[in-house]
Length: 81
Image (cartoon, rainbow, N blue to C red):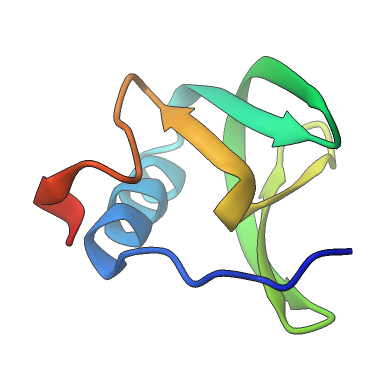
């Protein structure tokens, strides 16, 4: 597993707000060499092996630094710096 890269605090706030509001989110993420998309509610956040993960309603875990788009927001957008 590659080293975890911290995400911008403001982007984390967007993820957390969606979890609190219990909205279905569109999440595009990188899994190995594949780009995947899922629509689920975020129910929790956990630190596993020194990396932050979102836990989805279907129990899937997505590492936060692997998120490419979240509800059409790019985590690398300058507004999150």
